[in-house]
Image (tube, rainbow, N blue to C red; front, side, top):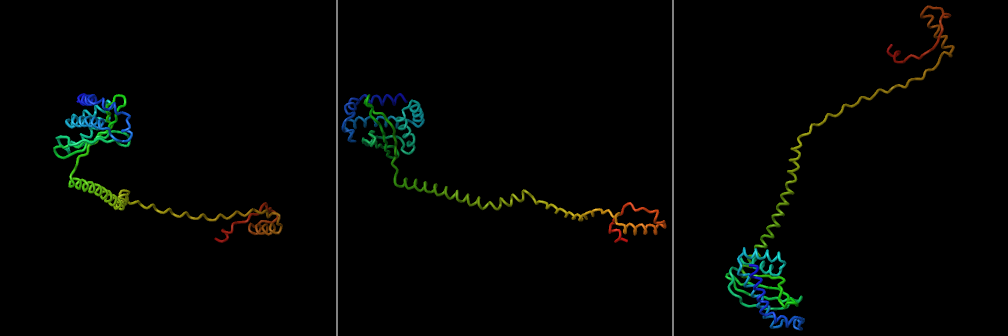
Length: 261
């Protein structure tokens, strides 16, 4: 199928190649006006491509598109892709109604072919450039636009509006539900953690009794009067003569013992 399309292209190019050679680089192209001979040549080329691709089935078109892309012929591949994307809406090809040729701002030839299909009309645009060495047109891109009725256009517009607004409302409703579930999520987390047993408060540590600073010992043996009094008291208590008693040291007794007495 790929070779058939190439043969058609080559035959069309050879049929009127001389016409393109005589017009390459002409003043008419610079002025964005299409020479009638070039227009006739490009028209035959575009119509031949159009009839060839519209005779393909969907499976054949997909295989051919893959082969063309692999071989680097993107222009012809885009033409086949345009037919694949619109064949469900147009139906089978019936006839070509008209073809117009013009030059765009980039100097490319633009052929606009209006054709009748089984279900509706369609407009096929083929963009191509003239190879200055061979004089053959080289397709760069293509598109096909089926003509829909006013009712069909309104139905599509309503469907697009419904889908767009419906998507927005669905997202808003989802966000609202998500925000509303935050409080339930918090309650659920508290239940999953379970009630925490309150730890008993630590018993207060009893305050340590203030440690009474030890009073420094004072050597009272030098107090002769105190020594004499203590010696006399001990002698009277033990019924021993005072001469036999010797006071080595004197210590102050704790006051607590006297209080308990």
